[in-house]
Amino acid sequence: MKITLDLTAMLQASFITYPDPWHYQRPSLATHIGNMCKDTLFSRMIYLGSRRIGKSYFFLNDLCPYLLKEGLIPVYVNMRGNTSAPHSEFAEQLAIALDEIEQDGTPKRFLNTEIKKLAISNQFAKIDMDFKPKVATDIDLSNIKILLKSLVEAAGKSKLILILDEFEHLMTSTAFDNFLYALRTLLDNYGSRISVIFIGSSSTGMKTAFVDDKMPFYQSAQINEFPTLDDGFLTHCTEKLEGVYNIHINRLELLDFWYEIDRSPHWIINLMRDMVANQRSLPQAISFIKEAIRVEEGHVELLKNLTATDKAVLLLLHYKRGLYSEKSVRIIRAIGGKGTRGGIQSSVRRLENKKIIITLPDKNVMIQPRRLIDAIKQDLPDEVKPWIGVL
Ligand SMILES: Nc1ncnc2c1ncn2[C@@H]1O[C@H](COP(=O)(O)OP(=O)(O)OP(=O)(O)O)[C@@H](O)[C@H]1O
Ligand SMILES: [Mg+2]
View (cartoon, rainbow, N blue to C red):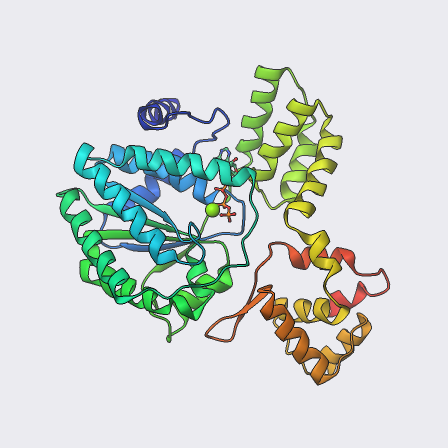
């Protein structure tokens, strides 16, 4: 075990310019997924997992070094890298990777840049819901086709592994449809010559992409749940705190918080940062981070602008209830909303216009801001809370 860890660390140093000292390595998961990448049985894989559980971090920091070590060529594209024009982002990333592979034989610098971008964007993350989707032109699409062909040629005997992060973004507008169709056709043409990993954080959006028979990626990949980090991550963090900063904390209290935030390493790392930088105790830092979660997710502002009907509609949509049934209307009224047909319809329109909800092609609804439902539940007056139990 120790040997594998050391090896991974050495490998990392070879291309990650500033290795993250807090990196909790996941060598067995990297080997597992890496082996599937080598095989032809699993050339299309989907990894789904809720927000902030370390998906992007794992694929960039653990899987990519492993793939490189094994002689495969990973190329990473974040579909949200350019929210209005994901096809441009795709083309740009292919071009950068191609350039480097042609010069050096591997895309190490390219991956390093992505690691840095991820670290920076995670510190200032805010979901951009206000974008104007652009349609890919025929020229854009044929450019992508040429780039991919050149990339496969440049890779030579090495297998190309495309890692497409935040893939559900392509579900958020019909403007992206022709890019989606073109991509499916292109990838099909290469068959198992290229392995593709699709990563997504909205299970509704991703399931629509791959499970709806009207969508281009219908049944084209194997759906997997992305495994969350194990509790060893907390030991890793507490050891670092003790060893480097001589700070000792109550592990059980940290464990409770870890479960409360659905095992999100993002918030644990921020908690560590707060304890060290601001010399706060664990309970103080926990309440600080809880507040930070509310602010970062924009809930305070968002909740102020939602009517009682909006909140009720969101809850009903989340629990997949019809909006107009007698029971639903009763719930909307109990929460303080109007409960008339017109009132409900205009609330849905308002939520759609603000891109808080997105109705997918299969009519399922994707609620965009993370944890908004939790925030709404917390915000409800006490006498209304029992109604949530009915849902
Ligand atoms: N294995 C790990 N070791 C140390 N820190 C980690 C690890 N995984 C994730 N983190 C921390 O959590 C942060 C968020 O991780 P990441 O961006 O990968 O989550 P995500 O699941 O991709 O989130 P999103 O759904 O928002 O895309 C990272 O910037 C890093 O600070
Ligand atoms: Mg991510």
